Amino acid sequence: MARSSTVDPEVRIVAAPAAIFILLAIIIADIPSSTIVTAFSLKGIVTGSSRLGFAQGFGCSSVGSPCGAVTSSSHRVPVLTAAVADASSSLSSATEAAAVAQAKQQIEKVISNTDKGRSSSLTPSQRSQILTKLTALEAICPLVEPARDIRMDGPWVVMYTDAPPPSNGQLGPFKGVAKQVIDLKEGTYTNELYVGGNGKDEDENAWLSAVLMANWKEWDGVYLDHDSSETAIDDDDKSVDYGATTWRVDFISLTLSLFQIPLFTQKFKAGTARTWKMTYLDDDTRIVRAGKTGRDDDDWIFYMRRGSV
Image 1 (cartoon, rainbow, N blue to C red):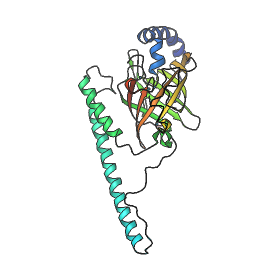
Image 2 (image 1 turned 90 degrees about the vertical axis):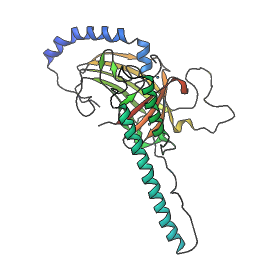
Image 3 (image 1 turned 180 degrees about the vertical axis):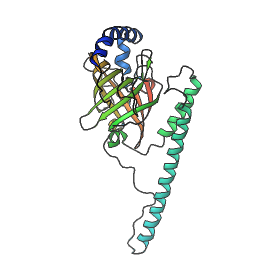
Image 4 (image 1 turned 30 degrees about the vertical axis):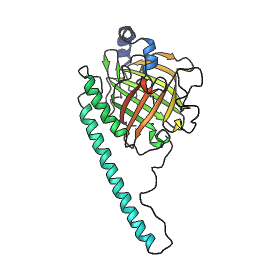
């Protein structure tokens, strides 16, 4: 979270009036209110121009039993079996860790010159290549219930996304950092955008910021674009546990601030919601597919690193 700083009152008095009107004119003209509403959301952040974005993952889950575990009534065999099981488990863990490290390395390489996905020179082919690398990491996520994993808690910084502004950390003509802070205990989160900040996450003492407040709960599989009870699967199949991977996020308010001074707060209409689908999670990396409805054809992908507290 950004730490507040002391600003000279005279600077505030002189800068605020002119800057407020200039910024509001630029930002509001550049970003329609409908886009702000939808863009500050993630499918499970997460959202084209009016789909999901900035804001469009957990309780602990088990990865499973070590491979090769065997039981026996013999006094010697269990010892040997345990040793084999431990060796097999260690080998499996080492192989998995190596695969994850390699996948992350490839992702970092392909996104290194993309300005977090905002570069105007990015071609559809390059975005497709990046998506392929991200999908490869998603495929080796060891968690069955990532949305319930405790590591979801805390701050996350967006390193790449294919979402539009302001979800990608850009507000009007100003580029900054997009950050998400989750509170599992309270069932809340904030989607934060900072421009001109410093510190490890570039969110301290920012001169311009936008913070979206929201609540979350486990998604029940009902698409958000229908008033009916239509779900993501056939009615015959009730075995899918949507909440294991996906949240429904409900927006509360959006506050725009200049030099840490709130300019205005927009309250969202009740029921304004998006979905977040958690597709990869470990101690320091997270991938979320944020959607407008819960359908796979309207989501945006977000690749994030663990932020600083």
